[in-house]
Image (cartoon, rainbow, N blue to C red):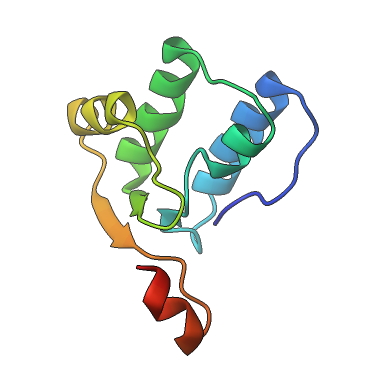
Length: 101
């Protein structure tokens, strides 16, 4: 799952992510942080810890996305701390996009 648009409301964003991670059909957070970067929003370490702790609890994978160069190193360090599985992704949607990776 991933949010491609969202209100500029970090507490709502965190609550919404947690709700998504509790959905049995969700198993990965795709291009994490890309929306935040585009919107000039920042998750604090405490907010990120809440998110990653829930991901670890629910066994939700964190995508390391090559196209958007997310997540940043601090996210990966915290993900490791909370036992969050990692998955590599490129966000390729068409054969033409292969040249970008």
